Image (cartoon, rainbow, N blue to C red; front, side):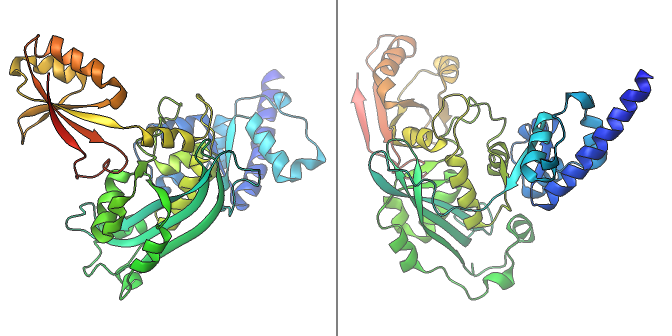
Length: 379
């Protein structure tokens, strides 16, 4: 009798979740389980098709994952025809429901805390990966105002998206990523004056892989070289905050929404939404953590004439061998420079007089090949 009751409960739960899940998915939402989240977190980068394939659960998968007995579920009410009640039921069963993303025009109507300034979230789609030989074919920018103290965004001021003919065929492998074809960009050009006007009083440019986007953007629009840049991929501590991956679509999933990615302005809007989320471990907005790290200066230390037999200690310390200059180099926070000099004195130069080349890296020079202010100091 107990086995029959268990089978009946399992069948009833299967049908209940199947019905509710169908209704939710038809409303534009997606459903996932903790096991799917683990799969996603193991991915370095997740494109939209992979995300959909992994996250959407069919009825048989739901049945296989549903382990809770029916009596442990919330009591059924007449409100379970409503989406909110359906969300609660699925959440209680261990599932995560993600909403379809709709870009807001404002993130807060509260009185701002601190000074409000402008920032721009930027994204590019390109013909390939090399800014020296490939070209921008789409530029997306979202300009918004935010509090410098809290990172809270307020009004979204401008959304810009334009295509550009690169003057060369778009490789098929690139089109598979962003779905932009030669026909879509034929004869089009991004308006330089409009972009320059948008960026005129922007305090910082944010990209989700600034190492990639900055090179392309500055090659096409040189005035971007005068702007500080921040990278939401590298300068938010996603791993220590419990995120298994830092791809934009995975971050969106963890923040409770999904979107159609790999078009420039849509990616910008989704990134701003992610940056307005609260970090689960440290608290505060992801935007605040990003700004704090972007504002901090670092010093690139060139350990001139360091002895070769000190290589193991230098590598363990995080230094890298620069083959062109045949010199070990490391990056340290500016506030830690004095301690680093003492470590080098004791462990590498062993009390002998030595020289270091010091290059200041800040938001104006980070994620670019241009060198910051550099000096050589004798110790």
